[in-house]
Length: 372
Image 1 (spheres, rainbow, N blue to C red):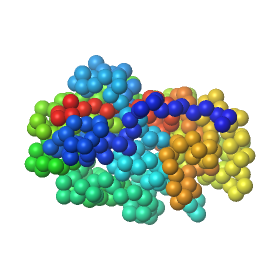
Image 2 (image 1 turned 180 degrees about the vertical axis):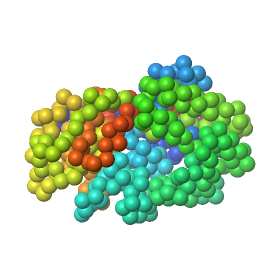
Image 3 (image 1 turned 135 degrees about the vertical axis):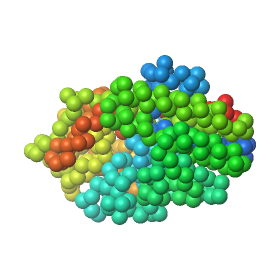
């Protein structure tokens, strides 16, 4: 190939294996974790291992729980919809079909939001997401503790069906519920989700005081969970992606008449990882233009190059047309915006993710309780 992409470290552990290995630990057959009577997977949205290391003084409990090697690699794109689906199905995006934040519905001009498109664009949770959720096979002993807004969402049905849902909007209450469920139900698997850190990062950046305050609350919650669980409960603490801050002067705005949009029928993905869907017969020209203009700021690959490089894992035939004809993954602190969109609110976002950098793709994999 004439292009160079970042390679995963040898023997690196993938986020796709976390839930599979957690279930195996219940039977004493995990390659990663010690046997456990019950398991809690504590997923903190938006906490990369680089972010945690840089603010370790504000997360003393988590910093002491693991070292530099206690990490996993999230999937590509390094975005919540793709990563959580991979965690919860044990499959890569090319298999489960959630290939980014916004992906084209084949045969349409709709780049559907993969977190909310179930409600707005009619995505079927039982067919658009193409792999059976792992918690469904553990029905009766599978629990989800998350914010109430997600109780009946399409994304929840697509990725968490088969589990009993326990809503709470307070993180400390979620921790208490998770510990109680694990204690009361031997052989159970509890998925504990905390989105607060990601929200703070998107709004103010991960280097902000607000993000640091949120990290301190997450650290306190992890400490409290370790204190509350019984000795037979194993806890995996991990995340779906890391985060980089992108200042406004590093925004690349794509406006009317921009030659980089010649031949582009639809822009999907997200600011740090665009899916460009080309007009009929224009894919090669679009790829050539972006490779010429943006090689210094982004990895630019065609769909075929991305699939050959294994970026999405094994790609099923039905998933292939959901992937852009051309992919643009930001290298440095850049973000690409379609400035023709009337809604400019996304351009206020500071903390971002989605690309191939280590900051975005390396996440903590910490063991607590029976796994420590």
